[in-house]
Image (tube, rainbow, N blue to C red; front, side, top):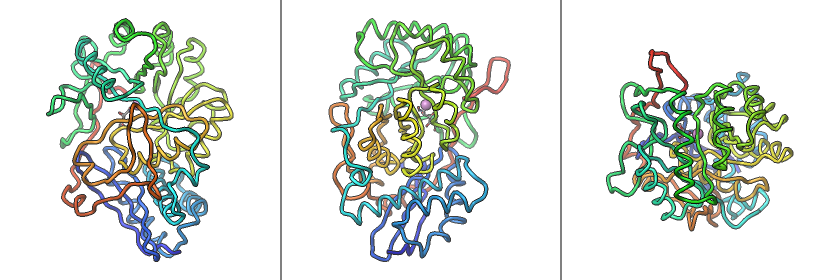
Length: 409
Ligand code: EZ4
Ligand code: CO
């Protein structure tokens, strides 16, 4: 088999997505996701201008060789743009290989290690009644694990909190990327947050009982000692994990946090290679790996990263917000089903327009996801529908403290 074409499709149904479609001389096509929220066109250019010319004529079955070739021949290694582009190619090649084999991709990764994939949903509210309402709606939808984010008194707009219910009044979906010409400015006060958050988890435990797995995302906003203090303060509420408690660049920060708390720690949604985890995994400073297949070089690289983590009893918690396209989500689900050290999968439903562009065969039943039994990834791209939704500039917000200092968002 030979690759005869590779096309980069940028589409913006409910939000921007970068999709790579690889076509072979045998008529089999494969899809890969290269979406990098707020910086989409850089990956589209990396692919179209620099990678597509290298793919035409190659044997699509040589996945490992193609991965190593794209990684090493670039000379300039790592980084979110490069690794998202490599991921798009890698996942598209796995899709082709599995379609050629006539099997769902998870079969090629070793077959199913479980019957379903435990997913967590995102509940949020500006106050306790709204938060409880959002948690109840997630429980009604079948979710068995729930991430909890709330407003903080004195702060106008906080990461993870939907400002209002969706148009149909049924969902409190939070979407950080805004289709505005400039990034939206949010405000932040870590001390106010640290005072408030334990009271929220106390209220949630009192209302929903001790069993429900609860998660929280700190979104890189704390110093190591602040994160240690929060982890300790949340211990009575038995969190499933505290995510991204400190800025991502400093792996040693987690030593300090770990010394002070037994609250499980998850990190890595902004990481893009195994090297970002070297200290974290070797020293057992985390409990869950948060990388996205889409941002970490695809299935080939994620498999190696998660196998490394498995040697230290560290589990997967693959990133799955709406800025991962249904293609990237399907790739995550096949991997989740196959690996032994699966932990949990993040799942935020895409909007209805996204479902028009991407026809998906994965299912969500009674709190568990499954990638389905279609050969390959099980996702088809409707290119005519995609063309109806051209790219729209959108930015993630940023934070300033009260005195105007830019803070981690
Ligand atoms: O803010 O993917 O855990 N999930 C998250 C996400 C990220 C977005 C950024 O594009 O932190 O909501
Ligand atoms: Co996160």
